[in-house]
Length: 125
Image (cartoon, rainbow, N blue to C red; front, side):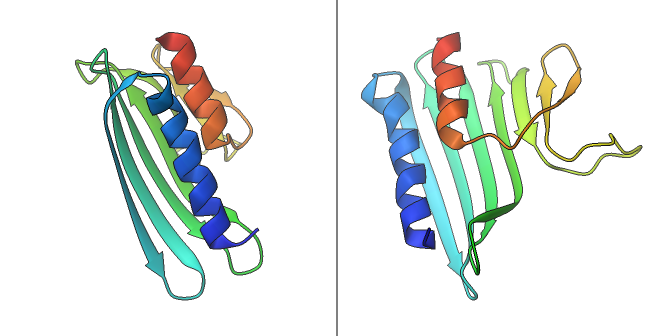
């Protein structure tokens, strides 16, 4: 898949939640870098004032690889509902891809697709 195709699929996934009428605002910033790399940042404010913050660092030189990512969903008061990311922890978790839950748990998960994250949020609304 080409980087531009990935970016288009990303935008379509984000627009899905808007098409349901659940958004107050959607802000997406794409920074295309040399060597087929990109940084994507997005903030989606939903009708209940909850917010989804997205950060992805993509390397598409050979294939689409999410070098780092974070999908953080929080309520209107800024309290975490969930966050998917692949950030390193100290002490080490023993797994890379993980999900933080609102009760403080850190769960081993597979790399989520942004459309799955959007579907999970729609389930909360």
